[in-house]
Image (cartoon, rainbow, N blue to C red):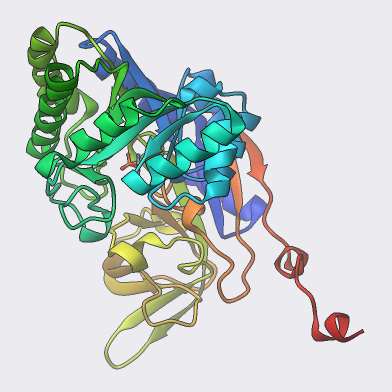
Length: 418
Ligand SMILES: Cc1ncc(COP(=O)(O)O)c(C=O)c1O
């Protein structure tokens, strides 16, 4: 999306504002799919809705043929609303309530089990409903994906998954085989996000394939699918990152090697989120003023960590541009800070920019994934609008929240007393 176009959108629709490119969503999806499909025919993509679960975005991905990875009943509702079939929805979460499990069985989706306790609760509910449920187990392969600790999910100390060590996962499959209302369909792992170390993916694949072989050899179990989760990183800085082609080129030979021993070919599932949506989105915000202290120069903008959480939560780096000054030289060093009453509300630190003035429009790039979906109403601030662009056209896909929206569902003391 070119800068003049973005500037025009900001002027017309106001800020803060998330802007997404539909072309880029389709391009990323196709690139990811073809990297794997060209090497492994039996590949399926389950877009991870958590990256951005806005209806219009998910609808585009369904049009592309994507299935859905959901982590809550709310995300399930989105997947259902856009018409994804139950067999194409997998539900992953480490702390599902009985109600979640009941809803999942009712919906007929695949439940990705995270503990033995959950297996037994799920079976009990399925038995009561007299409705069998398709399952996989999320396993913990104890691998360091060499990414930010807060988005490392397959470490041995991590809260996610059933450990492969000491036959814990094997025992889970053995137990599941004895349960009448449980239908074992697959295996799942997801070791983290923003992963750029291909060796981590290779180790993960080897461990999962080795365990899949064990399932066949020890308990005669053949799986319909192997789901390797999401996690492929994107380029936030000037340093190039591996592509889907690099990822597929690293792990598909491992899968093929094991398939010879397995003597069958399971489907291979992936759950990309960031790769599909990350570079698709730009957050536009306006400079409310510039403040110079004896120590620092701050650019105050009209979006805080309630709008974009990632820099405060993960120290993430996003490229920044002053859209109305792209031809000017970068002569000043600023911290770009939000409007939330917390010291940690810093969108970008120590950035070289042209001299900034109040009213300037700042673009924060690569914010399509885990941007709006992690936003909140903290400090009683309405969430921003989301806009989809295609060529020169612009469509509002989510209206900005109003102050009434903030007060909806609340009761004032007078209402309680009367
Ligand atoms: C189970 C699961 N699958 C897929 C994803 C998507 O990961 P990413 O956005 O890194 O591709 C996540 C994100 O954390 C996840 O927890």
